[in-house]
Image (cartoon, rainbow, N blue to C red; front, side, top):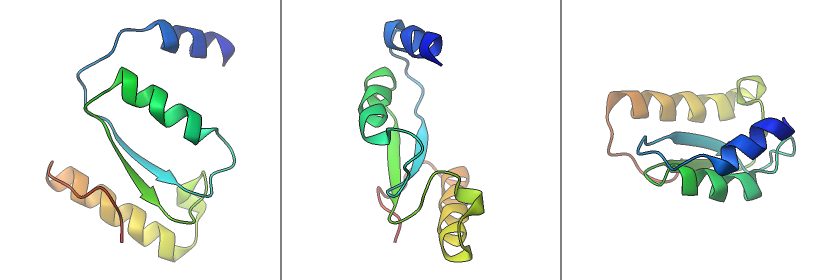
Length: 86
């Protein structure tokens, strides 16, 4: 992982627009640090937060999974999406 982090930080930015779905209760990764780094490397990216969701979202309760899969469906179906998940 340390080698990957070094390569990532040295890499050029990229025009690809990533769609990141992030749980606000994720304690597995340092997402508050990582998301700004990802945004610098992929400036066209968008992050969508799911309040209360943790790291492995497919293992979340049905209420969270419904929000996650609704957002995924929305992203697959069109490119002009909202910044938040209700």
